[in-house]
Length: 354
Image (cartoon, rainbow, N blue to C red; front, side, top):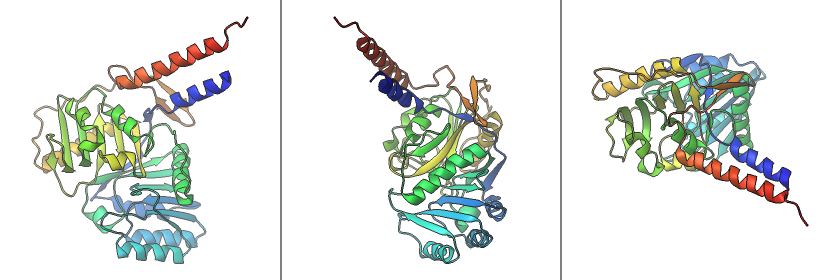
């Protein structure tokens, strides 16, 4: 019984969300150069795992078919549920893939499979906000991060393969946000860090419960495509980005600030400590903000990148939560209550019996 209790306690604590220190090799920006994803697929030698919302871009389909013909294992997970219905062009692309050796799964187990994720040869990850469509690559504004990290690649490949086979374990990979598992906690985490907030988000909705976190910032710069919140934001209908930058911390992924995106859909994003990436994306968000009519700041002040404590694990660094308001108070209190109850139970189990 005591062993079971400690196992349960460690399991609960293990699911606390924390960012990772992770090197990003390339930032692809739409509509500038995200078609380079096709080149990465063309370079595949062993396997390609892909999970996206809508797929209609024929050059990418051709690259996947060519890879399958070379003997590369190619798995593609597509959303069976799309707002307004799955386009006929997407159905035609899927049939073309299946007819030429690509393994395709229409996943209807979530309201939407809204992920934008590619894993190549269990070594390279491409993750971000852009759907592989002509409009996604040529018109929309968003980013795809290219990361060469075998540990991260294997973990994200596992998500794609499990979604392909209809298996849904609870994931607890460092810095990986997965809806509907831990996205709420991850987004709350970054939205409680100190510094100016820079946010480019396709959707910001009140039902997320996160709008008060945004409004707590004395200074923030927000650009959105759609929102029902009373926030100061510039609007750009071509924006599909999901980017949050606070100090040296960055979130990038497919997760919008909305209930369905966080609590119901399948979505994947990364929560990172990376001062260089933060600088790059902060400038990009500010550029989009000004282009959408936002007022340029008279002085841009970035939070000094404090060096948090970190431990190295399996080829990357897990960043410990830094002080100064980094962790929501209710999280701290919840863990404290669990630990106290566990300690009292252990003492009770070890009491001397007459």
